[in-house]
Image (cartoon, rainbow over all chains, first blue to last red; front, side):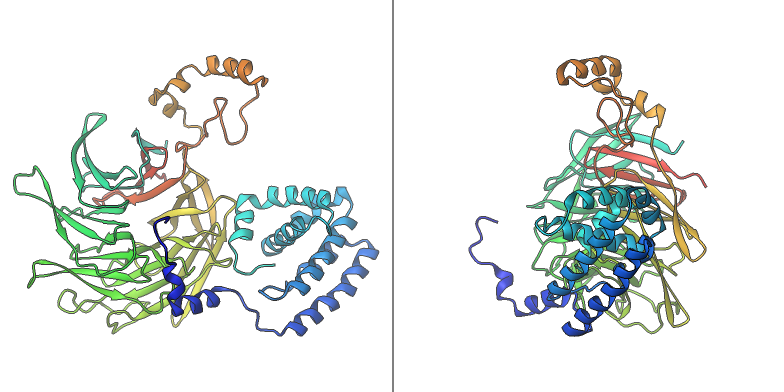
Length: 153
Length: 375
């Protein structure tokens, strides 16, 4: 496209409207989503102290705060998921991954990638070992779904 | 034994279409030409080269009964080619497509009196022959398509058309042309369907470009594969739509075909056809075709295969790697265990319609393979 001097789609107003429509926008308000994540936090931490990693993870993965503009809620939720991942004993990891539903597995992989993208705040070694297990269970298709999904975390 | 035949061409095959008895095949060798090869024994010989397009030919469809070929290209044109009376040359007829962006796929309708062309201009052009002007005219389906249309498929009743695109939705439209079509019987998709009526709109759970869409043989369901590595089947029934999605463990599929109403074959970036069967309300993977087919290794006499022991030790010397047992997806000489060595680009039924369990695939590795699915 080196010979093109004008980005012709930029002049098309309809195009910009459509591009916005394609982004996933949640129906809830920003504050509602943040509240939901905070409420999850106490239940998840309680489950971790009880030693029940499966329940803690399922709670942390439920109702993900999808959508553009939800970075704060997404970071908070991702840190919560990371707490559960680090608290799980190494011998329990396989069992937990095997017990997750397909939906939850895909959501977990999205959080893992979110964490890997922010190495300053997350323990990437733990994330990588979980990544290996989840991809063993879900195959390359689950990674493709993280990349392709409009519902971003 | 699921492979009937395998041929290797010295170029990437980005599109292919067989004639009615598979004695000839039209291919696009990843360029602006269409090459037609004829079968002579076990080899294919080049018979014709169709040179009219200026840019990459994106799709070829050979109508089995009327023996016409429609080609479309990124140069915003489509041509219908007919063989002249002497049978020695293919002559192009221009199609008045009126699209402002590339054409992505072209398919003849079941009765071969119309064809649909999907384009990057956010529309599907339905083309039929205008007797008055002696060329092919088009009508466009535009709303509510929001982005490039990547694939189209016709319903057996010659009126309904499924299309999927980069706006991540698969839709079913009516492509009824007054004067060319007769009113179709009422189906699960609706009745009284004027041109461009939207009969259904579907998306897969994680979205992703819809690469290929296909109606079931009876027309009651539509299946599509999208870039989120899933296959989705939608069946409208009594006012509601039953949508079943299967998430696959593999790389995204680029193309799919129905073998019968219980079996779908999909292939794509993972280089092997995967057979999915209906399992109650959902679908599951039944098998992967073409792995470890011993006969293929002897049939393809390529240099690396004939001396694999020699190569093994040569690798040990040059790469300082100890001899490893074959890993899960690649053999000792580094090639893939599947028949195709690169992405499968297109998948087509047997054009004569006599063998629903047979299909052909073409790939970026230059292979054209004929398969048969055992029941």
